[in-house]
Amino acid sequence: MVNREDIAERKSSQDIVNQLSVILRNAQIHDPNNIAVVTAIERFIVLINPLVELERTVALELIGEFFYLDGVRIRYSLEYLLNFDFLIREFKNREIGSIIFKDNITADDIKLFLKAFIAAGFSEDPYDKMSEIMSQSHRIEVDRLKKVKEGDEVDVRKIIKKTYFNAVSYSKGVMNKIKSGEKVNVKKAKRIVETMVDQILEEEQLLLSMTAIKDYDEYTYHHSVNVSILSVALGQRIGLSRKVLTELGLAALFHDIGKIEVPHEVLNKPSNFNEEEWKLIRKHPIWGVRSILKLRGFDPVTMRSSIVAFEHHLQYDLSGYPKVRDYKELDFFSRIVSIADQYDAMTSARVYSRIPMTPDKALSLMIERAEKELDPLLLKFFVNMIGVFPIGSLVMLDSKELGLVYESDVVFVDRPRVLIIVDSKGRRVKGPVLSLTEKDKYGRYLRSVTKTLDISKYKINLAEYLL
Ligand SMILES: [Fe+2]
Ligand SMILES: [Fe+2]
Image (cartoon, rainbow, N blue to C red):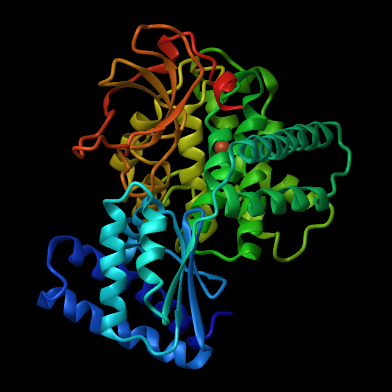
């Protein structure tokens, strides 16, 4: 249970990050003595000093896409989303990994920090400039952002790939076992989901990029794993704890388990379903509950998986299937899984729909359906997470190059990192990976997206580039 103190603490660390962002945003447009900047600094001091007094030193650290205050991850809140994202971007641009506050901070300390921050923004070696100026202060210290080396990135990719395919082969194994009437133990699933949760907390983008690779021969198995990853990633964006994320990931992994009872010929039918076939398909939520209850090792906590299996097609306004009466509302997990499920289904090539929808098209359709079918607030977080150009999208750049979206940018949603696959002369290449936030010395962007292209119209094997 979360108690009142926890909530107060969480709120105040969010406020600290938010207020720091407010100062910096103001300082970029006004001079340091402008009233907006001065007031913002005063507010920040009121927030930080009681904490410094209590803890002696307070460290604000950026790891991946998240801020940590004294080692505790600060949750995103919708209210502060833009300010958070702004600060992450600015930290990264200046290679700042952490700010350490020692002793009671004064307005002059913050002004020095602002001076360093702005000077660093114009410097070729932003971090060096920043720390050079900050060496004049005894109360605020900065530390460099820990960079992932190229070689490290390759290794991390390998580990992530292994986790992903392990999960896919597990879900295949479980379904086959259930089909043949064997007992399935859920302990292994828990371990797999725990690993995925850890990796999403560390390397969200990499694991998300695995879900962009769609393999239609084994759609059902990939789909379960993708929905699990997408659900956990959404769950961490809204600040669910590791333990809750594991329960969520498990529920998502089993959401379609009832499909094993739908006859194979129906499930893999290459044309549209008739009414009889639809009747069978609509039963998979209830069949799912039955299968889950038979699994070994399910405890009261994991029982929530059966609720998700039952509700995942019920929709936000309860107008979906199975038909229910006197039902209050969808379980919170079901609302998350429904979003992940729709997105993955729409963007995958399945037997009856060989051509998948492009990710941006799927998102815009989902936004249209929000309020009725999907929880609108959760969908906002989801869209922000996937980005305007989701990982795996094929984009045309104004430099006449073609690129695959490799990693989304939290702040500049329309300026992701892109892997160049066709150079400006029309030759096939593999790399480099470029950030569309890069500017020339006049402050103009080096490259921008001119349009998204439908990947299914080009002979591009995503796995070749993303794995
Ligand atoms: Fe389903
Ligand atoms: Fe599904």
